[in-house]
Structure formats: C-alpha cells, structure tokens
Length: 438
Image (tube, rainbow, N blue to C red; front, top):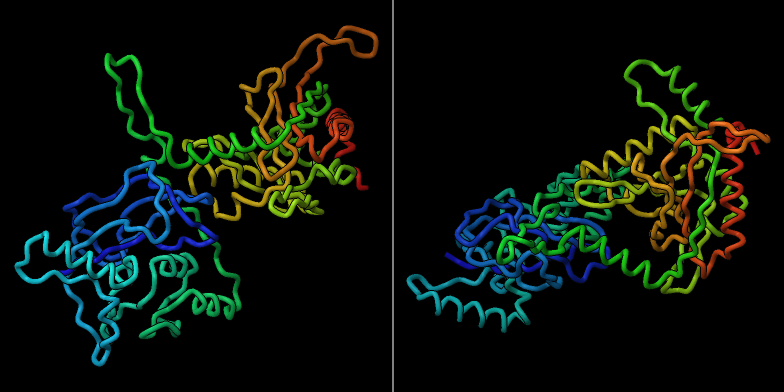
C-alpha cells in the first residue's frame, strides 16, 4: 500500500484559500476516483472537490469553518501502488509516498515527512501518480477534469503538453477556443445540507444554541459588513400611487392563459428603472476600488435579490434593457428560481450593475437596503396596500407603495438620487410612459 497526500488544488479565478463547508468522507471510508471528498466555499462559489485517486481515507485536515490555503494538505489516502511507465525514472518524485511492507505506522509517517521535505514543502507528494500507458486514465488535475466535464469535453481528445502527456490548463483552454460552438458555462455546484444548516450545539441547560457561521452565511455576513463599513449609504424613501399600475397589471394578467405565471410589480419596476437610468448613468455603475475608478455601464445588468434556503443571493438578468416586459418577467423568474435551487450558472450570480430587492407581502412601510457592492445603488420595494388619501381634492381609496433606495454617497449626490427616484415614481404612477419609445 502507499499513501497519497492530496492538497487543496487551485480552484481558479485568483483563489488563494477556501473555507471547508462540510466533509463528505471520514477516516476509514473507502472512496472511488472522482467521488466528492469535501465541499469548500471560495469567495465566488461553493465547490465540490473530487478524489483524484481511489483509496481509503487515512486522515483529513480541517473542520467546517476552517480556512485552508491553496496547496495545503487536505486529505491523506491509502492507495494501491501504481506501476511506473517504462523508462520514466523521473516519475518517482511524483508518485505517492510508499510505506515499506510491514512497517509501523510511525515509520510510514516518517517516510512521508521525508518525502515532503525532499519535494519542497510537499509539492511532489501532491502530484497525481503517473499512469501507465493503455490504462485509459487521462493524466490531469481535478480542476481541469471538472471543467472538462462541465463543458462536455472528452479529455481523451486533447493532447497534453505537460510531463508524460499530462493535460495542463492551457491545453484545455486551447481546445475550447477551437470549438465552433459556445462552451457551456460552468454550473454552480450543488449545495449540501451542511452549507445551509450547520449542526447546532446546545449550550448547558438547553436555553441557547451555538451555530457556527460558515459557508454562504459567512460570505453574506462578510460582504454585508464590508458594504456598511466602506460605503456611506444615502437612504431615500418615496411614496407612490400605483393605482393605475395595479389596474394595468390586473388587465394583463386577466388575459393570460390558464396556468401561466402572473405579472408582479417587479418587471414593471425593472422596465421603468431601465428607462430612467438613461438619464442617470451615474447610478448604473460599479466602483473599482483597486483602481479608484467608477465604471459606468451602457447596458443594465439587473441584480434581483432573492431569498433562498441557503441565504440571500443576487442572480443577474444580463442586458435587461434588450428585453420586453414579458421577457423580463420570465427571465427574472428563471434566474431567481435557479438561485433558489442552486442551478444558477456562475455568471448568473455576478456582474450586476444595479439591484432591486423586494420583501413581497412582508415588505413593511419602509426599509434601508444595503448596497450590493461594487454597485452604487439599490432599489427596494415595500408592501402595496389600499388606504384613504387626498386625490384631486377629495378623499379617495388609492393603492400606494413605498420605494426604499440606498445610494453610495461618495459617487451619487443626494440631489441626483432623489431626482432619479422622482423620475421612477412618475413612470410607475403613469405606467403608459414606461412603454413610450424615447
């Protein structure tokens, strides 16, 4: 038997560390190649890390909530020794550390430590074993294997330029670039229960419980804290009379076929917002803090704050300005549902230029939404209700709703923020203007 020290691989996109969300295996378990070992959370997404080889789990490193740097030891597997290809004497350094037959566990551990030292901080031990010719197993990293699977690529079709024909990232990139069809984009990995509901530990007396903040909840907490700490929020609340909008919404929903999804207020708000942003481009922007640059966008990439079982996510409707009311409504429903079911693609969760948020029937009278950095504005929808108001000199029952907005006061002046919301109010109170070209 031999020992295989598997280190946290480079998960791409500049990741330098990842948080352990939940182990799928424990010491003593037997795993097959490509079985999921552990789920980790990067700053971008949850990622399931597969086993590069088959074997028995000897030990794991880290508990849920621990941060593990890329290249750090993650798990040790006991594997069957793999014979080297003929003439490949250089491959010895890349094979798992072999324990002498009948050696005591301490001797095997010492041999492992010596091998890691000789290989330069364990780099040699982390490399996959050399695969004999004709085995049918393509030599590459788990990250590349995962990318290829998600892109529908058979790795056997790619010629590797690495040592012993190993496929390296540039080989897969070149192959994908040559394909005539667009590459299917990477799907967000399926969340596991451990990411949504960390095990609670009751305190003495059963009066309280402690829940470790890990995974998506930790990322949400971190980003919310950074947004409130770094962004001076300017909040603005405005009351709308949406009686005419409600009449239009009911009329359009009444013409729908049975079973079709009804229109909510959100697509009307989105369409009106897209129209208004033409006059307020400073609100459809992102702040690049590293370069000290405001990036204004001609296209509207609309974030839709969505509550999911895992916590708050912001799926994105890209190029929302190119969609009709019905298309916009359908796309908002689609990305929100994809976020709730963990089927959203990575690009569907990034790149928004302005966000709208709604608490639906729980919307309350007013709220102070937190800006979804690096954006500079967010528009919130509160509850719609009928109440008596003064309308054209008389008391009348009208349907009203408040818009609660927040702006980054460093880059959006209070006057401009108020003017934008007033323009949005005018569109929504006279909904025909939303559809007039210009």
